[in-house]
Amino acid sequence: MKTKFLSLGAGLLISQLMMAQFHLGIKAGANISKVDGKSFKEEFRYGYNAGGFAEIKLGGKFSLQPEVLFNQYSTTLDSNYKSIYQGVISSNQSKVKLNYLSFPLLLDYKFIGPIHLQAGPQFGVLMSQDKNFLQNGSEAFKHGDFSLAAGAQIKLAALRITGRYLMV
Image (cartoon, one colour):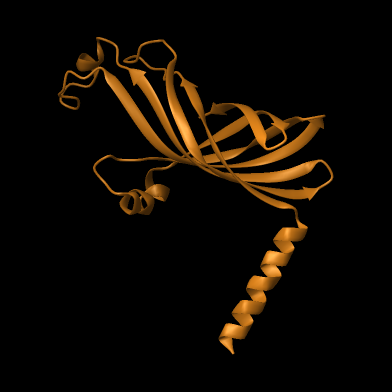
């Protein structure tokens, strides 16, 4: 009996998603970031992102775009970081890489032609290199951060070109 209800429920869910014009995709790109602070050099650094997204049509010109992304941000410590972080940072390493697992939830508005405007919240988790994926996930809501994402996207058939600004 339970199997019949689960099958029926799964069938209804899949049919609703198909009628809602549901689309899945993968994405990859470059991150250009700058970490501000007294112990960081004032320069832009490059990283990358990779992940997947879903596009759910809401009707009219609106759609919802949830994403799951792995982001790598990098920065360079200034020469005075040792005086600020005495006893915390013991190595002579000056380059720092931050790996995040990010979950943006964007509202997409079809502006003009292939141009779409996007905005929404993003939840990010700093991944510890000393822990596995599941251990990092279990601490996500204890040490995560929220930010606001806004940007534009150009849709050219199956290809999407996106520019986004994050306010942390």
